[in-house]
Structures are given as structure tokens and as C-alpha cells.
Length: 311
Image 1 (tube, rainbow, N blue to C red):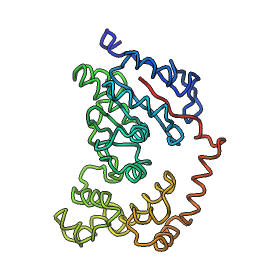
Image 2 (image 1 turned 135 degrees about the horizontal axis):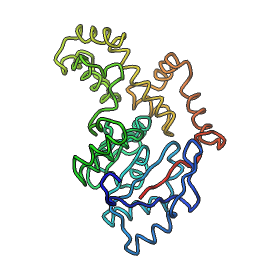
Image 3 (image 1 turned 45 degrees about the horizontal axis):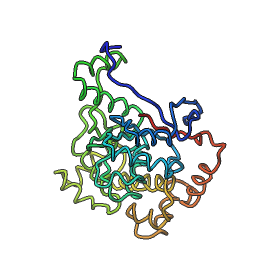
Image 4 (image 1 turned 90 degrees about the vertical axis):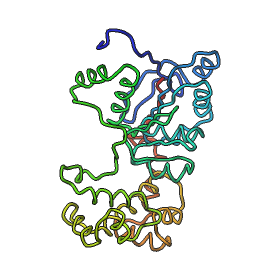
């Protein structure tokens, strides 16, 4: 409408020809199913791009037919997009080894532990041809505005932004990791740098003195910055990051407790379990049991087949 000509054409593909329910239960009609799409691809009907969209419980959709379809897209030269946890499906297909990518923050720790060959980043969206991945939510809008700008120019991208009542889209390299309380004018760059060093070194925690040296300040000054901006200490913040990652791994992976402890910088499962219980008020095993039951219980609201593939 804004360009006065057709710039994109798309079709929707689901696991079957039936409407796909998103996590909220709303049905989305599809054009065709995975097997019919595979046959069409084999016959030469290759799209310019395939956008893989998925939500919670993405592991349930890692079927051989879906994996085969993604590999066929790649062999035929289509650009592959991963939205939200769609990145997980692309990684499970073996297509992202050595590729820079991103995923929804809640799944980021599990992705890094499950697929060692990936170069996972905490960004809104990442382009590493022929793949584009984004963290989902509003980041999908940012990614597609960037796509419009690349294909049809800055003016049209700006016009689309104005039409949907936003000034502009965010840069894909913007980090998801910076706490909301730090996204304020005047925040210390040294504090943000220290936090990002912590986030990048959870498995082998860095000594606080080394972090201070790496951001160009003293330990005492770093402690003062954490107190002034976050009302906590650097050591406490670092521990909170490690425990938050541990909880994500308990929720989203089948890793053993010892493996999670090591991945989060703890020397033993007993030390990890004690610290985790003191922080969350529950033992790691209790969290794991709840997570398993949630995804096994089909009556759970988030268990509708939310995965869908848009081409």
C-alpha cells in the first residue's frame, strides 16, 4: 500500500494442513503443509526466503520432516530467518554451525549449551548470510524494517515506521543483556562494560579485581558504581547472573544438575544446590520437576502447537 506496488508475496506452512494454534490458543490458517512444501521445492518452487517462527516447547517440533525441509531450503539457496525460538529449529537442523545467531533470551543459555558450534550473541537480530535470526517479540519488527531497507531503501523503511506510529527501528546489534535500570542517560560505561564481562564469563567467573582492570577502574570504584546504580554489590550481581542462567537451563534443557552447576561456574553440585536453594527458596530438582510436568501436561495454556513456518 505504501509503495503502491507489490514488493512481497508469501505463503504459510504448518506441520499439517490444519490451522496452527499459537500459544494463546488463536488459530492461524496455513496455505499448505510441510510435506507438500517439500514436494514443491523439489519441483523448483523455491522462495527467496523462509521464515521459521516458533515459541515455547520448540523441542516437540524437531521432527525429521521439518528438519529435512529446512535443509532443502538451504540447498536450494533460500535465505533462512529464525524468529524467537525458530533459531533452535535451524540449529537442530545442523545449519548454524559456525554461524553468528541470536534467540529469545529465555532460551539463550540452553542454545549455547546444546549446540557448541554456534556463535550465540545477545542481540536483537543478527545477519550472517545466508541466515538471519532474531530474539522474537518487537525484535521481529526491527529485523523486518532492516530487511525492507536493504531491499527497497531507507525512505520506504522510514515510511513504514511512521505508518505504524514509531520513530524508527532499533539497530540489530543492540544488546538484550543490559538491565533496564541501566538504559538511562548518564549511566556509567564502565559499569555496563563490567556487567557484560560478567555475562560473557559465567562458566569460569572472573575475579572482581580483573574485571575492574579490564574496564579501567578500581575495585572500590566498581563497587561504588554497583551500589549507586543497582543497590547491590558486584559479587552479588555476578552470582545472581549465574543462578539465573542455571534456572534457565533447568527450565529449558535436560542437562544433569552437575552439568548445569559446571556451566554456571560452580565447582560441585552440592555447592550449587545449596546456593540455588538459598536464592530461590527451592531446590534445583524441584524446579526441574515442575518444568517437566509443565510441558508434559497438554492442558497447560502454553502447550498449544505454537510452531509455525512462514515462507
